[in-house]
Image (cartoon, rainbow, N blue to C red):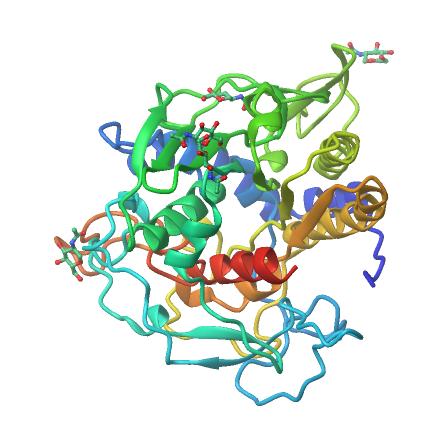
Length: 444
Ligand SMILES: *[C@@H]1O[C@H](CO)[C@@H](O)[C@H](O)[C@H]1NC(C)=O
Ligand SMILES: *[C@@H]1O[C@H](CO)[C@@H](O)[C@H](O)[C@H]1NC(C)=O
Ligand SMILES: *[C@@H]1O[C@H](CO)[C@@H](O)[C@H](O)[C@H]1NC(C)=O
Ligand SMILES: *[C@@H]1O[C@H](CO)[C@@H](O)[C@H](O)[C@H]1NC(C)=O
Ligand SMILES: *[C@@H]1O[C@H](CO)[C@@H](O)[C@H](O)[C@H]1NC(C)=O
């Protein structure tokens, strides 16, 4: 059961605005957004800079500090203790393992691949190559509480996926995930790229011997959107987001795909004007425009409801996942005012709580999924939740931090370097997302 918690986004927004410090931060960050993007993004990168955006202006402006004391115990959402043994309480009535209640972590997991053996790792997430020296984060493995989670068997998996096609649909975290997936499977056979768009945002690979294809489809809103950002991620105008039109980037391929993993979230916190029937309905964070402030939660709920309705009505015979949004771990500030993620160990119980922004996104995901999954199963559509949010919350040690760039402290060990505490190092913790996927596919 999902505990219902109603958020009043508007009162939260007003209370932030009442805070002078916030106003100063807001002013400063608008300037910094441009600066940071100019500093951070490297045009020669193989990947488009905009889409990396760990530093989405409004996410950063709105998000309160990440760490807060865990005062409220809600067993549905707060991660479970990680350093203690557990019994068998995470099995359901049929004795099946609940893959999303996490227990004992161990230092025993060898990474599937290394920065040397896998060529699919984007430079910004290749933490070892960029000079990160500590390695414990590569070995911590999480087990569901009280039951075993076998590791993905790449050989078996490729065999199982003969002639099948997959797509990861979403933003830069989906791309982070697809690279992890490709690295693991490529330990058996190297995937070959067969398609990429102009900016390498949407791509497709094939494993020749099993005729298995994997795509990543760039669709940060899952809905139709006009985005006015230059190559440095600086926007020249508000995003125009059509809440009632799904993005062709994925709908055009939907029927031909066997497995899909959708996700979204963070991009919704950006400044945007919301449209319905091609008519402006309101906006999010547009003080200079005469539109009703609707809140990003309004837009996110509307869009994922439309996505879910589309899935429910689709009569699709494959398997469709919605991956919950992942938390960031900035400490001591946000990305633009010195926030870092220097931890070298997973978090203990209650050390991190989802910040308000992440909690709002997650509550929408859980509430909408709960309703949709009932209708989907009535229609015979295999629609599943890949709830990586709680276990990702326990891994503040898994982000690139300053090692987004090559040897960031080479010239000056006290250099002020902007940290990426949102994306994940590869190899790294999100490799286990694939163990969960395989388990859900093989054992339901
Ligand atoms: C892998 O990381 C090591 C440092 O751990 C670095 O010396 C090496 O250049 C990296 N190799 C590649 C291919 O990224
Ligand atoms: C894969 O497709 C090929 C060609 O269409 C077919 O011969 C083969 O039987 C298929 N294999 C599976 C496991 O579906
Ligand atoms: C590869 O799989 C697709 C289905 O995804 C099938 O249409 C095609 O014939 C297969 N090709 C080969 C060479 O087996
Ligand atoms: C669809 O993908 C292209 C790149 O492949 C991208 O430029 C465009 O913004 C995407 N559409 C939406 C609505 O995000
Ligand atoms: C803003 O919109 C309201 C209602 O649509 C209208 O009454 C008002 O005149 C507008 N104000 C400006 C400055 O355009």
